[in-house]
Amino acid sequence: MVTKRIPKAKVSESTRYRMEADTVSGVAEIEKKVIKDTKEKKSKPEYPFKLKVSFRKRTDCDRFAKLIQCDINASDKEIKFKVPSEDSADVGKFIGDPKMKPSKKGLSEFHAKHWKGMPEFEQEDSVWIYHSLIVIFDDANAYASFANLVRQHLSMSTKSIYYPQWTPEKARNKKWVSSLPAKLLAPRYPIYIVSLGRANSRLTSKSLEEMNVPYFIVVEPQQYDTYASVIDPKKILMLPFTTDPKNPTGPGRARNWCRDHSMSMGFKRHWVMDDNIHGFYRLHMNHRYKVADGAIFCAAEDFVDRYDNIWIAGFQYRFFCAQKSKYPPFVANTRIYSCLLIDNTMILHFDGDEFLWRERYNEDTILSLDVLENGYCTVQFNSFLQGKVGTQTMKGGNSEMFYEAEGSADLKNLKNKNYNPAGTIKKTLNLEKIYPDVAKSVFKFNRWHHQVDYSKYKDNELVLKKRRKINEAANNYGMELVNMALKDEQIEADFKKTQKTTIGKW
Image 1 (cartoon, one colour):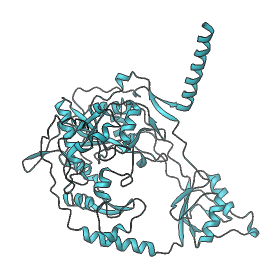
Image 2: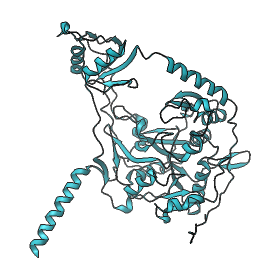
Image 3: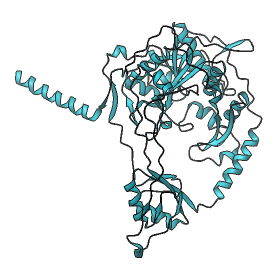
Image 4: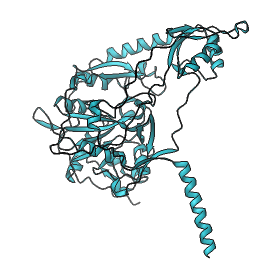
């Protein structure tokens, strides 16, 4: 039997990995609270049930009032639903006009100043709700009758609907495609994907492969063969260590090594990404369409390289940028998650040690706060998005190492869908103990979570490099919105035409 030779890591770790925070005290108290709150929630009667109903225009309000046969005033915030009777036909009016807040057009002065020379960004079509109100149902019969009237599938987990039903445009057939030469679409800084136990899924890897964007995937020695069976070995980098299952570090230690590797090759910055990102997107004109190449990475690099003090930048999560809302092209001085562009010259000091990533849990939030505490800046792009998969929804990685394993048996038995309610308690306490002035524990997203107030760092000012000139005109990096289905049809038509021409010449 021949054993494959596993290549050794050529770059060693430059610093020891720091894990100092106490994550034991306070866990038991929160677990008791979660158990108590969850049981109370389950015992709470389902009715009366409240549903938010929104309308996109005045005529929709009129139709709805006639449908449920009830007069509705524009000032009403709640109404109680009563099953319409045949005797009350042609009853129901929408009375008055809701007070609309004026919508500000264009970018703010701050964003207009800094977004010069970047891809066009417009989110003006943000008035997606003309009016909304809460409809209250006394029992299941009323709720079922309402669902039948509005012709929508409703459940007890439904929180809000549009009337009439509205569904976003299917975006799978459209992509932003750049016309620039391939050599101008490759990111100038190396991309690293830190992965553990996800050779089969490898979402980020597949996404970058599809976009023809070069990358390295960083794995532990014992998993090399598994990854090498599905990924080109030239793209695989071996870590110089194996995680101790009894004392796991999380991905931070591997991410520190990615910085060491990029510095060994002479790069000023590097990208580091989670392994569960399902595609990358551009947000523009109230639509989130996938990108087909590396144009947005090049644009982000150009933006960051304008400044002296942006230590970390990254892409916002796709599900945090709704098409029906208005956002700026970027947010300064906030947390950067899962897809990060990091300045290799960044050095943080603590007790005489130099470090970058640290701690077992919430290492990305801690890194962002460490940067901001040092007076430097972070930039989160809303114009460029990542299709990040939700926490605890995929096997492998932190889900297997921490989120699925932690917590008492009593709390695990209260598991809601994919979420272990105990899975994020320690990571939340970890952050709260390190940054108690800005972080606190809250229950949201169906799990215990952290909440950080970043307003403390609003005065960290972006510093443009001296003598740096920025073009006033927008630069779309050759990106055009292409209907891929029509493009495929055109390619097929061109091919058939060529075949006929060739046959004729024969």
